[in-house]
Image 1 (cartoon, rainbow, N blue to C red):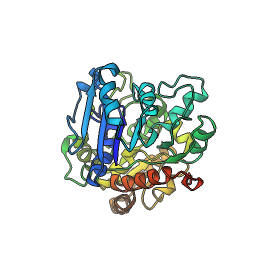
Image 2: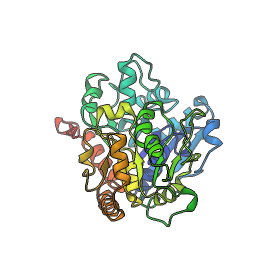
Image 3: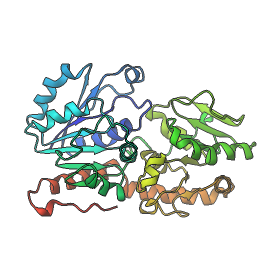
Image 4: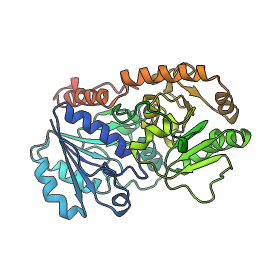
Length: 366
């Protein structure tokens, strides 16, 4: 297939989780023989933190304005098998109009932020990448979140066909490596600052750091405010490019995953970072959300923390127990949650969606 994607970013991982995901999936798609064109607006804050300049075997189209790239986008869509517009694409509505007018066989929206999208809509807030007709004009809507969210995409936004396509990891980028002293910690957390993660971050990271003053905690990410409640044993690492993620995880005795509140409320929302850490062989401590056990078995492959006490207890587990949990999570991730596995799943979904009959209604499995 030829796929043309209009996304937020693949060239810079600064302040967003999309880029790392797209890099792994695009690599897998190209390896499987597909042609991929990715259109991305060249904005200063990503240009200043760019950590990818070309797509091996594919095409990266960086553009200054929609007017400057519309002709090239129209030309690429002319013989495309699939056109995809994503959440937070800054030109999503204009790209969608171009897509709907094109000969592209399959017109797709991929919401990588479903929980946030639905929360904003329910709160009456504008959602820049959702037009007045919702998703009615797309043939297919892919959702990074499953469960009840898939039905809401149909009933609230008019999606004709909505199917979850969950997160993934690229095993070529995330794997066990020797630890680095500058990232060494008993518990780490890697994530861009988000206000709706702050309460959980306090409970599961900051408070355990206060109680375990002899332990070392390491936080990595962008956009943290100056008034963040730091403690003397929390060490901060500014934005890390994807190539350093594996070293960050592998220098941790355990790492923490926290889900954005809007996504956790919907459930069935595994983050890409969850699979990254598992692929690196690092024990994972996570907040709880419905559907978690569809991806990892709590207690055997992942440790669930609902309170500060749970987080402290996890850090007091014997090393051997944490290693067993990490080993089991890595095995499951490499078997079920890789970019290659999602590329194959995407092919299957597209194949069903193109069938002009009721049989194309792929079950919206959680």
